[in-house]
Length: 170
Image (cartoon, rainbow, N blue to C red; front, side):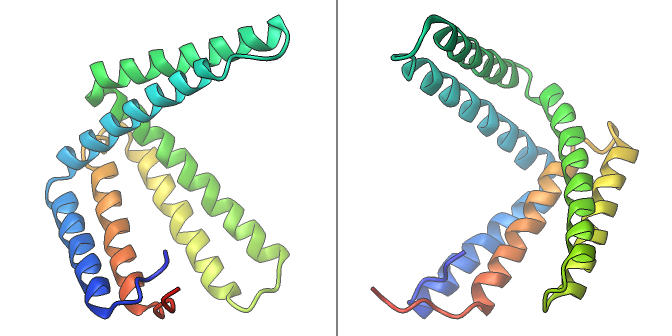
């Protein structure tokens, strides 16, 4: 995240991020549902984009693009029609993704010798444990986990914004 050059704009942006983080943590089901609905909208937009780019190429490539676009649209509509059920699936997906990311961070730290290797190892351990916890508690954690994680991520973004050096004005 690039920090705005204006100190007041940085504080305003961080304040808004903290407010959104607090709302997401206090109302995790609402934020998770809104995120899931947003994902459905993005899937529909991606499907439409796939269908719009069917142009050149042979018949098979057009057919594959059309199938891909239709899959995106149908998936997006499914998410919009059944956001809570989709949220349950999304929680499992996020758990698997975090577990995989944590293991890859650990593998990268083991293979490399970077200056922040200890932080990378800590990040990998925490991420893998968090993913494992989501998987182990699934589906019971589905209605609060995504919203809470999103809120914590927003809070870390606000802290990062306040502690990173400002970019010079262009």
